[in-house]
Length: 173
Figure 1 (cartoon, rainbow, N blue to C red):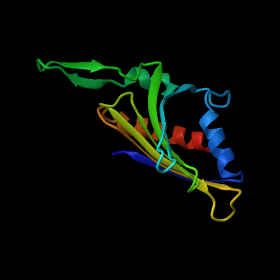
Figure 2: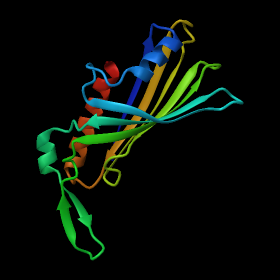
Figure 3: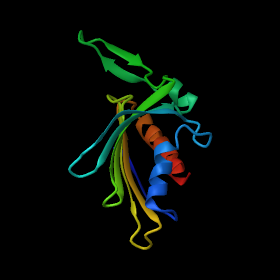
Figure 4: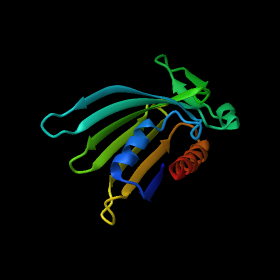
């Protein structure tokens, strides 16, 4: 089924300052679940000046232990045997973020998706920082995300609701 998260926020700081802060905010004592962020690719399009970055975030698995214990997913092997596995019992979750920074248009678009549990869950979000039309010294932020879990039976909805709540808390920080 899936759940969505939509956020709009205005930061009362200039675009350059907000983007610079975003790009260096992890790891941080304020966000203990983000262990590391590594830039794995960065390039500038010489014709447009757009800076492309691809980063991998290593995050602590924040799914409550009780859900990790009771949630199993069915795996069907090539010989048609069925096995129950608890794929949620991993210490880390990996996310890939791609961003396009356009200083001329004063916006940065980002797309993020989860690299962990791809056969059981999908998490994707699109975010944009842009100079505010209301005040050029402010920055508008919009984010749309979608989380969908399959294969956990009745717990699909519980896991989706937990993820939705966790993402909403993260945006408030």
